[in-house]
Length: 259
Image (tube, rainbow, N blue to C red):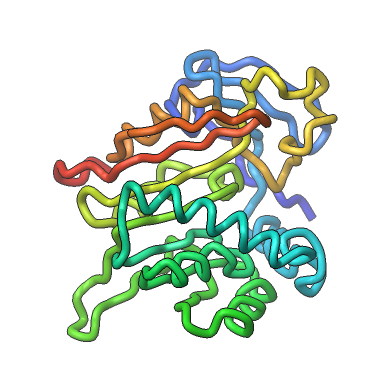
């Protein structure tokens, strides 16, 4: 069964229709936007293919992120120390694509009201079992609409989204939902692979960041900053990345929604 959707009419970041072939592939060819430099698959994986990728991705929570949980928690605590400089606790924290809940738990330890959302049911089960004082939801951000006890929409002061946006065929829509969930002035920490990084292997297939169809969009720092600006975020800090990755801290604009 073909697990691809129709070809894109334009770049998913800047909507430019001019592009060049980046990597030939019989099933998952990729193209580079002639305007913003973003690399993207065309066609994209369909919803069924994406759902299959996010079901028990770590073999019963025994591999990958789960193989060294204490190391994962230490790393998460370090990132929380950085983020506290921009949004001190107490505040409400959301981990988008929380996996096994390590970052969510580190946020709770630091005094945040910590929430996590993740589509993989096995990962969420691990998080709920090991980090019982956090709030976890199985699903995607598109359907995530938490409310206060009085029924009013619940919003967050700080959101963390690491190695997620490259999996999303429609990143502008994804960021619109992040924007919806954050308070004006809230902090948004975002990481993703960097297709333009000088240390990226010349042969892109030798790079662990290039793995279609799981990763379907490959940003440059410039193109990601451009997309964030169009979706109501201002980048306030760019961290140095020695490996081929982008690390940004942005703020949800105080201006009315532009998404």
